[in-house]
Amino acid sequence: MGSPSIIPDAPNAALIGGGFIGPVHVEALRRIGIPVVGILGSAPERVRPLARQLGIPRVYEDLDDLVGDGSVAVVHVTSPNGAHFDQTCRLLESGRHVVCEKPLAVTAAETTALCALARSRPRQAAAVNYNVRFYPLCHEMRSRIARGDIGRVLSVTGSYTQDWLLYPDDYNWRVEPDGGTNLRAVADIGTHWMDLAQFVVGQRIRAVCADLATFHAQRFRPIGPAETFRGSGDAGSSRPIAITTDDYAAVLLRIGAEARGSFHVSQMTAGRKNRVLLEVAGTEGSFSWDSEEPNGLWIGRRKGPSEWLERDPALLSPEAAAISDYPGGHAEGFPDTFKQLFRAVYQWIGEAGATSPAFPTFDDGDREVRLCEAIARSAHEQRWVTVEAVRVNESSAKGCTP
Ligand SMILES: NC(=O)c1ccc[n+]([C@@H]2O[C@H](COP(=O)([O-])OP(=O)(O)OC[C@H]3O[C@@H](n4cnc5c(N)ncnc54)[C@H](O)[C@@H]3O)[C@@H](O)[C@H]2O)c1
Image (cartoon, rainbow, N blue to C red):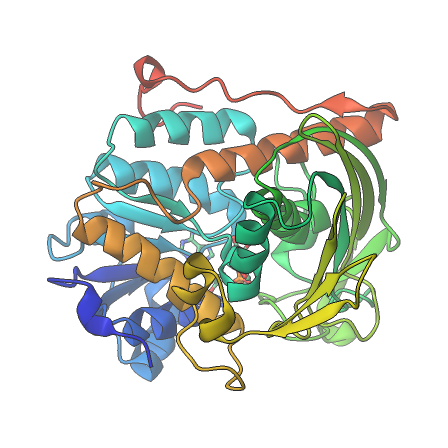
């Protein structure tokens, strides 16, 4: 399903990073008719087998080699977080459209510089892959809240929970400090939740009060690389590492002028593989959405029976129907969110940036890193912290200096 033809003169894309999420990008791009012509990994010999498996014709030696490939118009950055800033700067400066994985970078100084650079190049797409928004029923909540269906928003609550880092011998680059906020669960999955919450209610989180926990003060690092969701390392070929990044966080929120909220994130909740929960309560009704049942939306009412809305384009608002390709009863899920987000990006590119972006931009990515910094400071200083406002202006676009 879907309509590849909606993207005229499909531009060529290249991929950076070939771990867990890189192939998800490739699959989604192919579903919308975008050719993926090359891949850059941590080393050419490491990424070559994946390139063969995915049928990607070219393996780049390094970033210079990619930048020198004049056939590439768009680059998807799916390397680990610490590499995003340098790679994204270089690509934007070379005139490429960029779709960067979240979080956009590891400090607000870096994201500020990236936003300034992106603003100085308004015809280049500068997208961050906060894909959870692109579940159709998340767009549906946003539309219904905007048209006043649940009245004034009073509270926004929920969680993002996983179990893949439950044991001390579960290891991944994410558990190491990133040299920026040094947050892990919050930066990795908390920013997805906060992006979704702010998108759905159309208001910003303005202050946070956070409590962080590191349950495993020591983990066992495999001697070789440990890629995402690949299970525990082999204790025989690992060494102990002291851990300071958060396994768990609970955060109180002040949102917009009036609303309150809270969420928790955990990468140590047994049985929860990758669960996002969002509940929004207003003066006239409420919504509850659960990524484990992403094709249904609970609509709560005080004076009448509550409702369960099955995703069906025929029953959705125009904004949600537009990102829902299959009829009701034909489940859509995680890979479809990538397809829909990328379609929004490539449509915008096809229209030469003439419309306002329907995808998460670098400004959204910057907002999330500012939230991370506020959460880290709040936990450290044990107090409420106001989220710093964006200070980007075009005159500060000096290139890749954070
Ligand atoms: N939107 C989502 O749902 C989602 C899901 C998972 C991961 N992510 C994000 O995607 C990024 C990658 O995560 P992952 O889970 O795929 O990690 P991963 O460890 O599975 O894969 C990262 C890949 O990048 C390669 N790599 C390392 N350094 C590199 C460099 N300098 N240049 C090029 N390649 C390099 C590694 O060899 C590896 O193949 C992270 O930023 C993460 O937050 C997003």
